Image (spheres, rainbow, N blue to C red):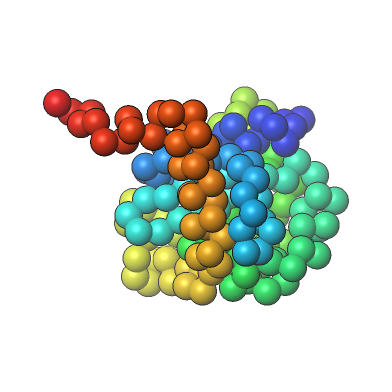
Length: 164
Protein backbone atom coordinates (compact mmCIF):
# COMPACT_ATOMS: atom_id res chain seq x y z
CA UNK A 1 0.00 0.00 0.00
CA UNK A 2 1.25 3.48 -0.85
CA UNK A 3 1.74 5.69 2.22
CA UNK A 4 0.81 9.36 2.61
CA UNK A 5 4.36 10.64 2.15
CA UNK A 6 4.70 8.81 -1.18
CA UNK A 7 1.32 10.14 -2.34
CA UNK A 8 2.45 13.72 -1.61
CA UNK A 9 5.55 13.27 -3.80
CA UNK A 10 3.44 11.76 -6.56
CA UNK A 11 0.95 14.66 -6.26
CA UNK A 12 3.73 17.21 -6.70
CA UNK A 13 5.05 15.41 -9.78
CA UNK A 14 1.50 15.07 -11.17
CA UNK A 15 0.86 18.81 -10.76
CA UNK A 16 4.13 19.77 -12.45
CA UNK A 17 4.11 17.25 -15.29
CA UNK A 18 0.60 16.03 -16.01
CA UNK A 19 -1.19 19.30 -15.17
CA UNK A 20 1.47 21.74 -16.38
CA UNK A 21 1.77 23.80 -13.22
CA UNK A 22 4.60 26.34 -13.23
CA UNK A 23 5.47 25.30 -9.71
CA UNK A 24 3.98 23.40 -6.79
CA UNK A 25 4.35 23.44 -3.03
CA UNK A 26 3.89 20.46 -0.71
CA UNK A 27 2.81 20.50 2.92
CA UNK A 28 4.01 24.07 3.39
CA UNK A 29 2.66 25.32 6.68
CA UNK A 30 1.79 28.99 6.39
CA UNK A 31 -0.41 30.95 8.75
CA UNK A 32 -3.15 31.53 6.22
CA UNK A 33 -6.62 32.82 6.85
CA UNK A 34 -8.23 29.37 6.97
CA UNK A 35 -5.63 27.17 8.70
CA UNK A 36 -5.35 24.80 5.73
CA UNK A 37 -2.02 23.13 4.89
CA UNK A 38 -2.51 21.47 1.51
CA UNK A 39 -0.69 18.24 0.78
CA UNK A 40 0.13 19.71 -2.64
CA UNK A 41 -0.93 22.83 -4.50
CA UNK A 42 0.24 24.13 -7.86
CA UNK A 43 -0.40 27.18 -10.00
CA UNK A 44 -0.75 27.63 -13.73
CA UNK A 45 -2.43 30.05 -16.12
CA UNK A 46 -4.21 32.08 -13.46
CA UNK A 47 -5.62 29.26 -11.39
CA UNK A 48 -4.59 26.88 -8.65
CA UNK A 49 -4.94 23.11 -8.30
CA UNK A 50 -5.13 21.59 -4.82
CA UNK A 51 -4.43 17.90 -4.14
CA UNK A 52 -5.34 16.26 -0.87
CA UNK A 53 -3.70 12.86 -0.40
CA UNK A 54 -5.56 10.15 1.46
CA UNK A 55 -4.02 6.75 2.10
CA UNK A 56 -7.07 5.37 3.92
CA UNK A 57 -10.85 5.73 3.93
CA UNK A 58 -10.80 6.81 7.58
CA UNK A 59 -8.45 9.69 6.70
CA UNK A 60 -10.78 10.66 3.84
CA UNK A 61 -13.84 10.63 6.13
CA UNK A 62 -12.10 12.65 8.87
CA UNK A 63 -11.19 15.29 6.25
CA UNK A 64 -14.91 16.07 5.82
CA UNK A 65 -15.01 17.52 9.36
CA UNK A 66 -12.54 20.32 8.61
CA UNK A 67 -14.11 23.78 8.57
CA UNK A 68 -12.73 24.62 5.11
CA UNK A 69 -14.25 21.40 3.73
CA UNK A 70 -17.67 22.01 5.25
CA UNK A 71 -17.64 25.58 3.86
CA UNK A 72 -16.01 25.15 0.42
CA UNK A 73 -15.42 28.87 -0.16
CA UNK A 74 -12.98 28.82 2.80
CA UNK A 75 -10.79 26.22 1.07
CA UNK A 76 -7.86 26.63 -1.31
CA UNK A 77 -7.74 25.67 -4.97
CA UNK A 78 -9.66 26.74 -8.03
CA UNK A 79 -9.69 23.01 -8.79
CA UNK A 80 -9.56 20.37 -6.07
CA UNK A 81 -8.60 16.71 -6.19
CA UNK A 82 -8.30 13.81 -3.82
CA UNK A 83 -5.42 11.47 -4.58
CA UNK A 84 -5.41 7.98 -3.13
CA UNK A 85 -4.33 4.41 -3.80
CA UNK A 86 -6.64 2.78 -6.35
CA UNK A 87 -10.11 2.16 -4.91
CA UNK A 88 -9.61 3.81 -1.50
CA UNK A 89 -11.97 6.61 -2.56
CA UNK A 90 -14.62 5.96 -5.19
CA UNK A 91 -16.24 8.54 -7.49
CA UNK A 92 -19.54 8.34 -5.61
CA UNK A 93 -17.73 9.24 -2.35
CA UNK A 94 -16.58 12.65 -3.63
CA UNK A 95 -17.97 15.97 -2.45
CA UNK A 96 -19.43 18.17 -5.19
CA UNK A 97 -16.84 19.65 -7.51
CA UNK A 98 -13.89 17.46 -6.48
CA UNK A 99 -11.79 15.42 -8.85
CA UNK A 100 -10.21 12.06 -8.10
CA UNK A 101 -6.78 10.65 -8.93
CA UNK A 102 -5.96 7.01 -8.28
CA UNK A 103 -2.38 5.85 -7.81
CA UNK A 104 -1.55 2.24 -8.62
CA UNK A 105 0.95 0.04 -6.76
CA UNK A 106 3.71 1.19 -9.13
CA UNK A 107 3.08 4.86 -8.31
CA UNK A 108 1.33 5.76 -11.59
CA UNK A 109 -1.30 8.47 -11.17
CA UNK A 110 -4.49 8.28 -13.25
CA UNK A 111 -7.16 10.96 -13.13
CA UNK A 112 -10.56 9.27 -12.75
CA UNK A 113 -12.80 12.32 -12.22
CA UNK A 114 -12.21 15.98 -13.03
CA UNK A 115 -11.86 18.36 -15.95
CA UNK A 116 -10.34 16.78 -19.03
CA UNK A 117 -7.85 18.04 -21.56
CA UNK A 118 -5.16 20.69 -21.34
CA UNK A 119 -7.37 23.77 -21.06
CA UNK A 120 -9.73 23.85 -18.12
CA UNK A 121 -12.23 26.50 -19.12
CA UNK A 122 -15.74 26.23 -20.47
CA UNK A 123 -18.34 23.49 -20.19
CA UNK A 124 -15.78 20.74 -19.49
CA UNK A 125 -14.45 22.45 -16.36
CA UNK A 126 -17.50 24.28 -15.02
CA UNK A 127 -18.68 21.54 -12.60
CA UNK A 128 -15.19 21.44 -11.08
CA UNK A 129 -14.46 25.15 -10.61
CA UNK A 130 -14.43 26.56 -7.09
CA UNK A 131 -14.83 30.18 -8.13
CA UNK A 132 -15.05 31.26 -4.50
CA UNK A 133 -11.95 30.24 -2.58
CA UNK A 134 -9.75 31.59 0.17
CA UNK A 135 -7.34 33.75 -1.82
CA UNK A 136 -5.89 35.10 1.45
CA UNK A 137 -4.66 31.62 2.37
CA UNK A 138 -3.13 31.03 -1.05
CA UNK A 139 -1.46 34.44 -0.89
CA UNK A 140 -0.16 33.76 2.63
CA UNK A 141 1.36 30.49 1.44
CA UNK A 142 3.10 32.17 -1.51
CA UNK A 143 4.37 35.02 0.68
CA UNK A 144 5.67 32.50 3.22
CA UNK A 145 7.56 30.62 0.49
CA UNK A 146 9.11 33.84 -0.85
CA UNK A 147 10.01 35.02 2.65
CA UNK A 148 11.85 31.76 3.31
CA UNK A 149 13.86 32.30 0.12
CA UNK A 150 14.55 35.90 1.13
CA UNK A 151 15.80 34.86 4.57
CA UNK A 152 18.21 32.41 2.91
CA UNK A 153 19.51 35.13 0.60
CA UNK A 154 18.41 33.46 -2.62
CA UNK A 155 15.45 35.67 -3.56
CA UNK A 156 17.61 37.84 -5.89
CA UNK A 157 17.90 34.79 -8.16
CA UNK A 158 14.34 35.39 -9.39
CA UNK A 159 15.57 38.50 -11.22
CA UNK A 160 18.13 36.61 -13.29
CA UNK A 161 17.18 35.75 -16.84
CA UNK A 162 17.05 31.95 -17.07
CA UNK A 163 17.23 32.10 -20.87
CA UNK A 164 20.10 34.53 -21.33
